[in-house]
Image (cartoon, rainbow, N blue to C red):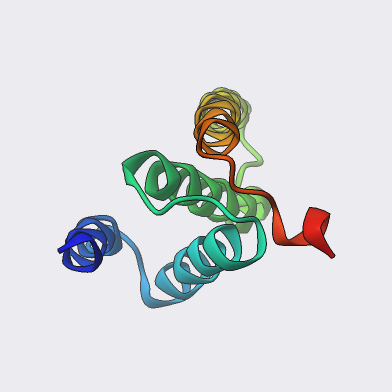
Length: 107
């Protein structure tokens, strides 16, 4: 049952992303679960989703030459980075409470 929940959750996030962003998102999810030892849940998917949005911002960086666009870019990137930080804290806390360790820490 848990696996199907994860698939349903991932599909919800993938609908909004382009194919290259989907690939980036799924790689981040796999890395977080299998290398970092995080539990797959909604907070982890949001964390990976915001990492993907940050990558989207990086890809549009050359086009932000106008003054107002530069402001929108900076504010949008700041909001995304704040969200990444918040979700990272949440998933770190959940991992610590569950007793799971990062695969890197185990090696």
